[in-house]
Length: 456
Image (cartoon, rainbow, N blue to C red; front, side, top):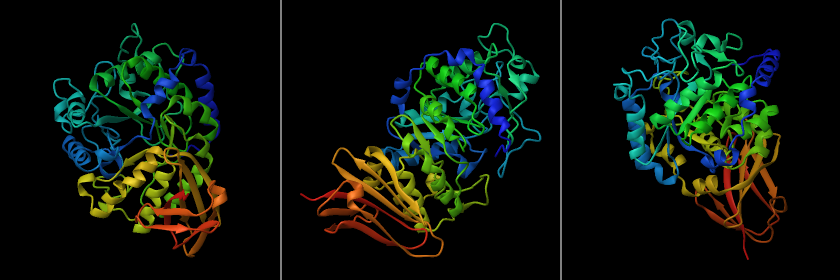
């Protein structure tokens, strides 16, 4: 949801400036970045199950990942939004009469009718154990802030010496599209202790990844500081993903220090304008692609989505095959985190092929120096390098809706010369180019991905 009033961003920055406890913290930045040296890869329940995913569905997707994807680096299984609501619904959220599950300290707990292994106050630990035993990692989604119900009931904050939830909140800047929580005022006594208590619990459960929503627009610097402090203290390596976009570029120095990944745009769904908007916004984030901190293109809306999702009916992705190649090529060349949004067990052979191309996976993991060469007249060229074998990657995109385009790049602009061996990473086709440039004729909405090596 967009907050159009720019004053809101200023208010957040002012609130953040009072966060004395958080800002005086010495963050273990280099250690934190070691937890995601390559872009995280996994599955997220949002695109296919919205706020209604159940334990058996999570396990089914984990089982599929182990069998089909794990060997290529896919490893995270993430339970998205509102896992603590017993009676949520597809196609949006039940905000009329939600039945929340939480403990005596105002911390949400898994709904037992959806996650039965959470019985006897075990929380997500049994599900995390199931996933860990398969060699995978477990993640969850939360909203920033403190539950309204905890505030209304004046629940105590664990470890805060009698401070209660109603003493650390403000109704200002509440999330516009989901009203479960209030904003936490970062400089209030007890604010840090509340986030500390959350991550203490998540560490006990075995959480490896956390996606925190409504942090980026406007940018809640104060709460992000509290979150990072809590991660540093919890004793477990937890990858931090801030969501959704559009993260303001002015926040780049902060977000690249305090998060492992951050969303550049709002949700990306299976329509062509979502892809072109993403490519446009991504232009300003190329300089910030670095080990441990990754601009995030959002979930991958391919395969079978919206079984009980937010947008539309149960369907296979509406994108054409050309558009699907374009999307997955851009995500990979950009080195975005890769979180598949479809129901993995429902994949067809084509969808699976987009996730299991070894050469593309190698590029995504090993490439460096990602940059856009140009984006003009519906033509886009993005390149990167593989320092291990001195090869160069080049992705060309025709985002025109109507015109077939010839797109050309001079080899001198790629730092290579002479006779060049060209490999098409999707088809496996190889050729040799002896001219001074490489070109491709592309239909509307289509793309190509090359690996280039100078022949000696």
